Image (cartoon, rainbow, N blue to C red; front, side, top):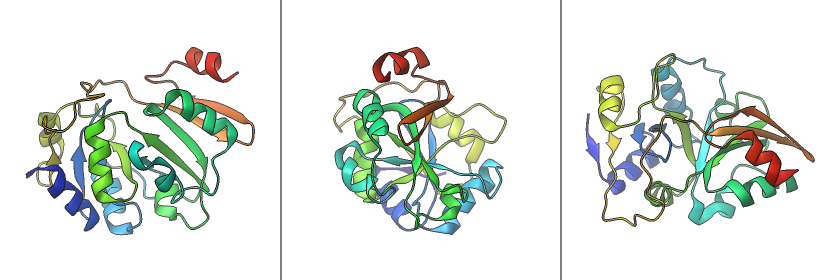
Length: 210
């Protein structure tokens, strides 16, 4: 498996390939979100159903621009969640634009959105220029990869490379990955529902939002 620089990884994703990349939680598998072939390839590699929705990752540097590619208007409750917990390990499931592909949304009409505090990842997404797929780098039923050796163990020969952090890029918010996944919250109108408690505890959300 090829070890990629940030420029090489962004080029591969822009050109319809699949790579692994580090985040502040676990390694993820990524591709461009508007092309069906690489997205379906990720689902096949992971061993998940073709109609399963996948979350996406946006850059904290171009948050408004990338949100506009995914949703038509950020609900007030979602704005409040983002104010307190973005960038960070919170996935907000929000009603999506009608033209967002079903191979991302699973035909649900909703999309899960993350925004990482990891400056290296944000720089990578900036170079891609669009949101990317955000799904943990693992085979279904196995633990997510928390380092590049795990990625090699799972995916050598089945993906197009792995992005390794370049410490010459700003180390602001540079955190060591953990094995704790993001917290998932679904928003609708003025309400929200915590679907999975992860790195952000539900008590913290209730305290800030209610």
